[in-house]
Amino acid sequence: MADRVGLTPEAADLLRRLRDQHGPLMFHQSGGCCDGSAPMCYPDGEFRTGGSDVRLGELDVDGQPVPFWMSESQYEYWKHTHLTVDVVPGRGSGFSLEAPEGVRFLIRSRLLTDAELTELGEL
Image (cartoon, rainbow, N blue to C red; front, top):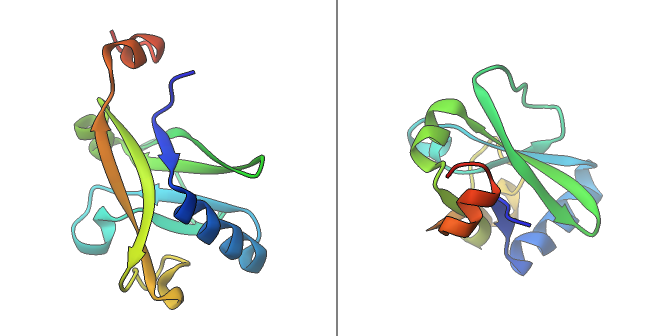
């Protein structure tokens, strides 16, 4: 089944550690500049989503869903891509849960295939 979001094994490991510390998690990615252009990880429900946000899907971490939201304006630019949440060394955002860990989440993207777009109802 086609999906819009996935994660690397390294990101899954970090999410397990963060979940152990903070409970259920969520991601939100806005279309803003600076930290707002990075995927931000929060305790689930701490970031309030609204009508201008799109739920792209859920990341599966050991059978526990981590919802991934994106601002609608950002989605319009990225709706033809598959996003993979990864983690790299560096300083994360002060608001994202990984900030004290000495790493940061980032997005790797690729274009969705025609078959994926068809399955997702885009073609």
